[in-house]
Length: 117
Image (tube, rainbow, N blue to C red; front, side):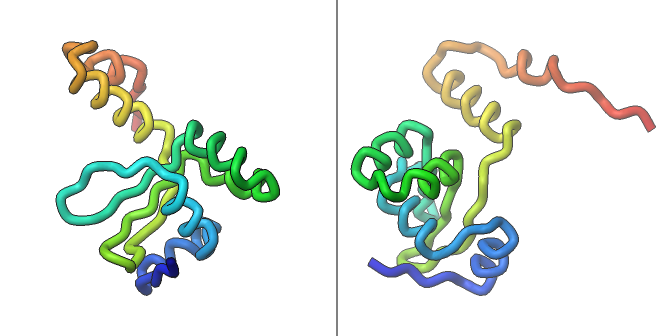
């Protein structure tokens, strides 16, 4: 299935070194993230390993897509991006908070240092 890219998605894909094939791979071998308005697909490292077993000839491309996210509305791609380290920590903390393993998010804030002006 072919997806269309909005003007915003084309600009962001060019800035972030994505192409249509990358978006298709994320959409095919991804983990859907719950969102009320759009379809959000996140490519985990686990998904990359599973995809490489099916497509060994595309191993380099798939490994590069680990940690990438695509946001779609119907068949139109709104944006694509790579998750930053801080976003991954926040997502992990939120998941643990939701499951009741951690009672506060304070430990993530402790490691950050403020810049001095």
